[in-house]
Image 1 (spheres, rainbow, N blue to C red):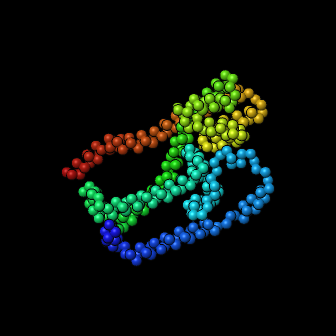
Image 2 (image 1 turned 45 degrees about the vertical axis):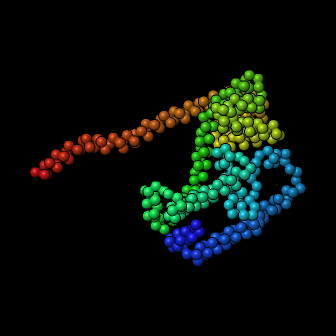
Length: 332
């Protein structure tokens, strides 16, 4: 097996000396990145802030009721961004997609790195196994792979690396958009149920728990966010932070407005039932306006499509006979 692998490497132009040089270069790069990540110190401003905050009392819910990703250490600094701002943006994208675990950022970057390595490695394994005769591929596929040059293989590997590394990011954005759309469509029904429950005599927190349990199967995204917010409140976290974080995790404008309206009503002592009734009617009006806006945009969008499809046919119908007549005239 090793002899066939060495023969294949020699056939594609990779000598043992070249492999030693490549291995030495990759090993040196990993050592440099690992040492730089391990020995890199913190920002002096952050060190001074931490030194000043050591003697202060810790807040009741400072990171106890929600998962916070720890700073990368050691070799993980080469994979996970050290900048807190960049890491927070990745956490926000993962939360919008529904991934809120304590190691979600680390798993996300490991997944990207894994796909970027596994896909090219799988292709190389298939090519090597096919050319050495270990596995039997279909004749058409075997002929196509056998005709690949070294440059062609390198180009395909580059494409696979790009797909494996950037594919999870595209899939994450797609999942976040799909989840946001599902929450946006199911939130009006949840708001109506909360309004009915509050008018029936339940408290706001009890109404959210009841609605979350009722919508757990039909609308799991918004139900999970409601139940998570109520668990945080029951664990001792302030209601305003729990509701605002729920709105931030959903990424829906209506949920953010709902959280602000509820918090303002509780702050100023107005009736929650009247507040929810007014907000529900306003939300229905806004959704109707958006539907009308989309309907008014439709003729403009259709006009471009109709012009691009019908204009060539009209030109052929009007100018076609004239062109044919002149062609016959010029032909004698």
